[in-house]
Length: 547
Image (cartoon, rainbow, N blue to C red):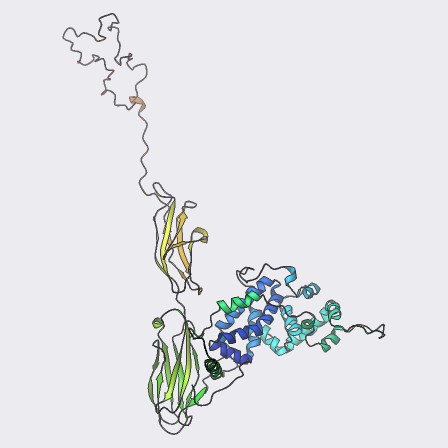
């Protein structure tokens, strides 16, 4: 811990909630949610007019806020910064009532319905001005910052809105805010005007219609699903009273020691965040380094504000962190820039990594700590994506191909989908690390496919697109040509055959003793050309027409 001075902030202030969340304290993040959930949800509901969409949009707002919290220039400006994020966010993409953690929206779920039934014609900007000023009580300067206009212009537009909305809202406000008439009081006293109600109630519509309450399931979902960039991992639970006191004191010191002064235009400036040394001569420019999900290098400046030469050394606190230079000496009035380098590949697994970089005087008379945090995201590995056939749908080919791949990831479960023609998707079924799906020949064209894998931390990997050709897998047989007409014998010219299969002629005799075969005579042996052999042969080679 720092043994010198450091900038302090109130733990329960907006700035304290920012610094505690940046320090990875989930209890502080829960307190930040509890403070701003209702205003954020109420403004989303005013802009979207649907409770389910407002719940999903609120979840996305907190998700973006945590991801960009280290870019907030002034921690005390957390409220207008969040409101500005809500106003610029618009309708959530792919939102559904199921995704928001709540039931399907019904008209009774919207407490603002009575207001918007009275003034249904307002556009998005006027709804925002109306809600922020009359329901949330923000001043014109804050409202102008949120919607992107000057305070004078915001005041002028709101004055015109009051005049235009007076007839529509006066009955609602009078019925809910006007004091009851006393017995014996003036019988004909007119009801208070809109301006009188505004004067008696700084936020009249908030009194008349309280802020909408977000669904209870939304809080559980936000705190469970949104990772803190610098969240602690594996912190043991205190088991004794002394351990609890020590833990709470350590958290308070970390929260108070991570205060950062920045320029109002959100450009960070190196400031003295902590001093240490024999007489607090050494100072560090910051006590927090947040590398986020992509950066691996940052710097911190060490100054010797005294007159004497002082030696110093560093202790990275984790094997994946290096500091260059690791030690040295500074003359009075000199500075040294320390380069902090994180080896992301040395992290044991994806997720949040955190360590305390210690910078101390070499003589042991004081030290300071710099909280170094990063978030390592590693997409799933899609190994050997393949198809069971490179051709499909053609002659001799299958009509369906099996697509498979090996999927490995550090943050299961992994959702794997197969993307086919027309960007249509289907879930792939796991068998161990192997995922498979089937794809058909479709319309007869080539089939383009790829695999998309998404892990529990929403890291996504996509395999290169591959093509299954719609082509033949073997040669098609040639069509058999019909016989030539000139070679086809006529029916009348074919020799007739009897029941025995032998041809008959006028010389054949059916008398008893006849053998049904001619007897050769005059040297005729029955095999000479022109003589019949009794087997129906033709003079062109005998029986080779394929009939």
